[in-house]
Image (cartoon, rainbow over all chains, first blue to last red; front, top):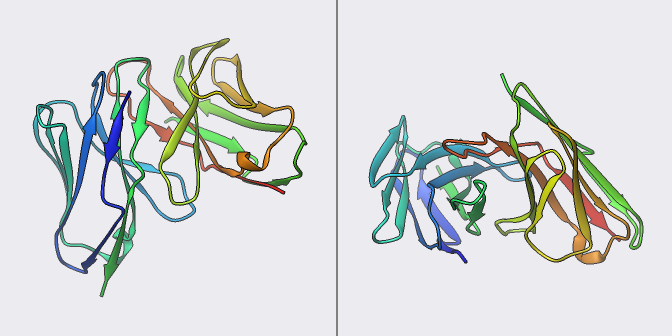
Length: 110
Length: 113
């Protein structure tokens, strides 16, 4: 089975940097994904790691350590529109199935 | 470009009534297809996935079923809804190989009364 843990809530200030952590235990690994979900909407893909290290995409970066079962999503230069839930998901090797954490609700304050 | 359509967007159904949610994908062939459910304030729970026409795998025991009558069509059904079936249902697709990035439909919000 798979177990994914991430903080329930975080608060940060506009213009700041925030790091959202995710730890996982999995019986098979084919990548770790981060999705953003605004209230009442469907999730959208943000970032993907399959090898150890840092992936950078504009204001968003994601890091993976497979040996530690650990990932984080780093958001820089926070904007009010970044207020959303951030979902960590682990894809196992069977038909690309992804298991999701419960999400971290980020509130960005002025 | 690929697009995914899911409907209806919102529905309110009485306990014991049937359910049919439909999802179609355009612009790709032989996608992996998925149905997820999201309870309020929670993550996504995988209900069904399909790697091809007529191939359905169920992840959790429940009174729901899924079918894939065509390559890019995925249907979620129930014969008799329960109160616990209320939630936000999301259809998604991914490529059959490589990075399995999920692209979601807009979702269907089901309330069972």
